[in-house]
Image (cartoon, rainbow, N blue to C red; front, side, top):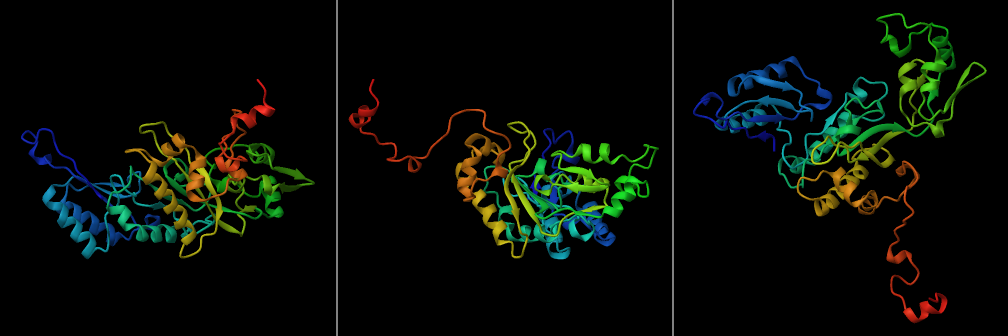
Length: 360
């Protein structure tokens, strides 16, 4: 993993790009760099490659574009022995896990994205570098439902921060927003005059589950109906804040169009605490992999397998009990599928006994 072979169809015409391999280098957590480290990367690629980089690829890696076959081992040695860095994932394996800045700078982060991302990257080095999967597999870590890494649209397993308790409300700050004391959206829309802030139109009316209302000048939230969309918190960050009982939700099956159309992630684990050594999270991951590697076709993403076999099969494979959060809407067809052990007497029937109560 980490090297994508590129060869020119006419090397005799274009000898300079007869080989033009791409290398993926694992990015640091949160994409934090020192200038010294960036200089070393650029110096290495100027010396061993084309000097062209992409910061960053859609998977998240540092992308080195264009080098020849004899240079690959030299670059790998330099990265691993002198720079403390490793290659990322490519091919039918785990791709380089990618995260947002998380708790290092963001007040909305519900868990330490960088620590979880680093831990799983170290845990699953074998899956990163030795292709054994039906197709690519991506982890992405979002600290909150703002989804700055867009994991819900791109990752086979999305780790999206969330909370279980109530949104914290500062009623004085709410009054400050209504009275024009504070600029909505942290002043992000200051390029022109948008008029007076209207909490009914800009916050309450845009709540997807309609769980907010004003009562006697105070903002009320029916937290059990809240879907954690973050809109109200983004508009009034001084007045509203995430809860204290924090963890993450695990969603599965997102992907861009490949063989099938694009898919968003489906909720698998509504809430799980994020505590070292992250064993509960790893148990879910490995159960998913076992099922996917057993049942998945060649070049079939996890989301396509779920679509082909059904979400219930995934629940059975991961030993997760079905719950209301797994249901997006009521069923459209009247067919209910029973297992043999759920039917009294199983599938075996004595036809003579059956005809006693069911005459033709």
